[in-house]
Length: 306
Image (cartoon, rainbow, N blue to C red; front, side, top):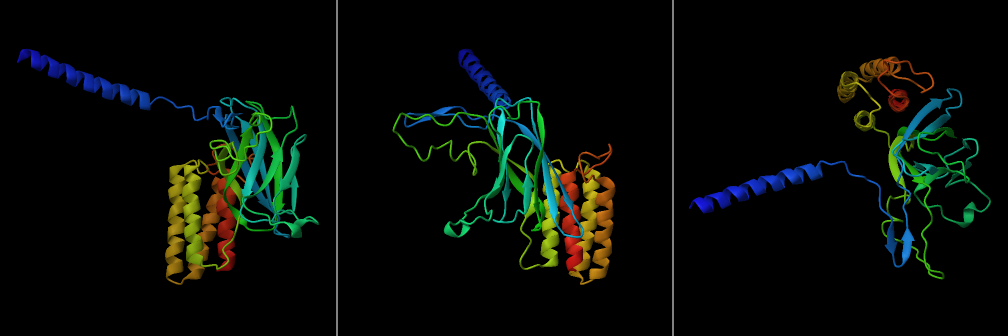
């Protein structure tokens, strides 16, 4: 009996040891970078071995109604590749009226751009505006590059995807062998073998405008902005929440005048707590330029429609 008891105790200890080891292993930091692979004798490396920070900001020309979107890309020290491609994913084709690139970068090029051949081919999504570097101009770890810019008179600021890609060799296949699709390479992201993140960008306004539904979308974007770190203070987020909730109640009651007053107070708080640009952003501000543009311009649009 004593022997059986000792075996039982030993098994219990081993069980707890296994559980402890499992917890330790699953809590270890995991390298999210994909590993090189082989598919049908083709060797490939993905371009996702990068870690970047993207800083976006928006301005609007009051007279023309044109929005200007500009971006700065910083390659973080964790990057194992240089960044050679950067794209903003767009909701529609043909919405860009002007764009510029950082010094030395190629592009910008965008799908939907009007040319004399546009009528001969259908431009399919995903639509994007993109920039690429020539050899030697890539963004290396700890480097920062500004000057990615485009202008549009279409839409409103919203939360969109960006795509970036590290400098990796193209898939190497045996001579004469053509592979159109490599699993884990071509479909690593919806846009290519790099990485995808969120930033500020132009989005499609609703064709059938309904004030309460539009306000619900603003509330949803505000929550996402907080989760992305664009709203840095929980108390400020709650204060903005309260104003949007009160405005929604007034709209539901049919009291558009009261709703406008609350929404104007909301914009005042956004301007007081946020920065329009990263270049001029005093310490103590709790809304990044992304949150500032997202909330200000969408709420202004709502007020104009009421």
